[in-house]
Image (cartoon, rainbow, N blue to C red):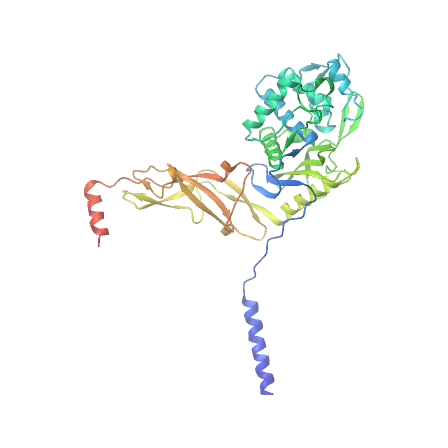
Length: 420
């Protein structure tokens, strides 16, 4: 009986101890995405939320049209082009628009179409001839527009893209509009990270693009053409809780089934890229299923939190001051920023690494209030937060107060007191 009582007592104590231990939540593991490369990012900050082989340069087919569309929007913003401008169709573009192996809307030789009409055809129906017509209008010829694409990509920080035409078709498929001295099978190539960079720039600078990309069907000169985004509301692969409103698909023998998606849930927009998913037939839904998998992973397992302007970042807010009447200042964030963290985590999981100007370990007085003192790289659970552009990881910080310099007597007295 005594042994039984002791056993019950020990068991009770052990259970009490176990129940008193803190519950450690585990972050959900990243999904296994069936595609050669993939990425998910926040549309405003460029924070990377998911990544798989995102730096490998791969064929992207009609996803290329996003860069063309971005350039056209730039031209409109600069006043060099208008939505209402009419573009007259050349014989070469008219022939291209009826090529049986390409997605298109028919464009009649000698007829003029507005920039707006060709933009909608490019984005919704993935019309290749329409995209090339827009490129020619911007630059004057396929050769000049190729140079414009390369220049724009470089301005966006994209260094390793291979770009040949506005549509993303092979050089041979361009027919008489092909580039000279370029291989027949040459096709536009970018990495998933590069594609995300273009998509983020397009959405940030020209948010109205989603009004075009959210169309499930295109009405063009009396005919109706189905859109290619199967994740839009009412489409076969739509997910009720994923508010997808863009962006662009791409299909070719080299690129397989690829897709750039964007969704906006609770005013938190993300951009996803799937490159080289399965494409066994024209109706193969693999690219959309893999996109939905990434989007659900992000929204179900992560959440964005806001760090306010003038807030302090843990482990990155104390700056030593040389020869100042105060020995330290606080480093405050200049701007408000948003950071995605695990759904179960709190802002206490966020810390930072402080980097002072000129890589110094301290700064010299005098210091003015709100003077830039360096940058902070954010960490979540001790892991660096990654961004599409590494410069976005460096958040500027400023001093919280002014610090005057010690005079000669004060400096001498401090040396004396520090020697004891």
